[in-house]
Length: 358
Image 1 (cartoon, helix red, strand yellow):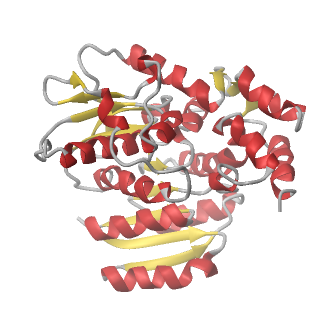
Image 2 (image 1 turned 30 degrees about the vertical axis):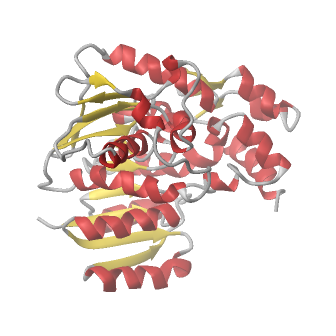
């Protein structure tokens, strides 16, 4: 059965995912929504021409829940792909400006005030409409899904991050002529580890390595995640982020084949895990000697490198001391804990620093 897929947010990585999904899955209609719809209109039209699929474009401001509600209700999508945020993370990460470098130094969690609002709006609308439609989210899933889980708003699954580790491992096996298409790969890993994996830089402490389990016997081969060609951090990461999302997106479509893969933040958990997706339902696929508690503990520890100290049951995220030290001189207000129910003031505060960079 062919599907109708809705993308909320159509920036660079969203468009790459959309194009890749049309090339590999039975999609009958693709709806791209973005607040700058005119800017992507030529590329959207070309996408339809290339794949012989109806591609529709709608201008929607994700800050307006009524617009989001109308978008979702009227289109009745089989899958929602959430890619929207107030700014791109690359507006801070790797940007050569003292303010950007200060915020980036403390970890990506400091970007919560500009990354969470649109995702939370989407999930609130999905809940208010009473939908069971799967939602796959690319926006900081390792950090944001546990926050949303405290309100019963966690998306079905995240995209990117540990899925990137999975592709790097698979490609290394192919390079070694040691992958035969049916080799089971299971990866436990966090967003904070993406940069070391992509730069082929193995951490000095083995306990901080991505965990890689191969084959039916699930033997550990962590080194595979850190082999292969290194890539410096930058927008080029969007290529592998989009590619790593495609197996998950395809598996969430109606009548899709079952998938064994690694993906982030299922069921609102922090970090990424080996998963099985069957009939758009996601379940953990951990090795027998690894409990869910142990896997979550590993990812919580890795999340500290992103600036996350802990998340309270009421949806308050506390930053690590290192994250707070990084931005204390810039603005002490940015060091205070963030609650997902009271974001507006913090969003405006962080945006004021970001817009002052231009």
